Length: 265
Image 1 (cartoon, rainbow, N blue to C red):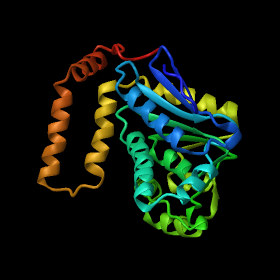
Image 2 (image 1 turned 135 degrees about the vertical axis):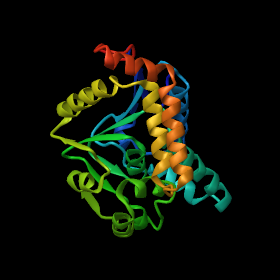
Image 3 (image 1 turned 120 degrees about the vertical axis):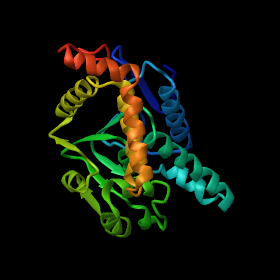
Image 4 (image 1 turned 45 degrees about the vertical axis):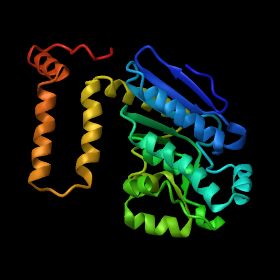
């Protein structure tokens, strides 16, 4: 896989791609280079048919401290038009991660602030260590968590957002779990890897095409009104999957009590 300035990437033989934020001395803070590289990396992985799952993790003691101070100093000198262009680059990263066709799993340790919370909210499954903490700190700097807001609010709900967007309080991993931002809490780095390996094994038992379709189904249904059009659309989607090659193979394998071809041992 391609070499990056602020990322480490690895593709395993089982189709699991691991992307590591690699600015540990700066707590994996965002700047325009990291944003561009992570966006490009995710788009590349999405286009690779051999990739079945994307793991997002970080080197060092923090997941991501949000915006890099030097980057923020440069932004402070930008015009509104230049700031809009810059913000759209971050918005493109969040959109790319959130709507990635492949399932995504975040491994979170230490602090996730600002845009780091956005990355977490955009992933499908999140495992975090007990020392993980979260903060939407933008209002302390006279800013707002704008481009990450659709994904964070979808993860934690409007009511929680009305507190944490406005107070900029730091909250621990158990609060994050109660809010729905984190799915699993583990004790330390070793347990984080063990739980991730367990979830990888579970995810790789499932039809790759069905996983993609299930993820798209969530987007289509979650904000939709339940009416005749939506009911027909859901019927169309399951009919399409039943008639697909993997749908037929999965049913045959179940009835014949054997594993389908996509299962990774």
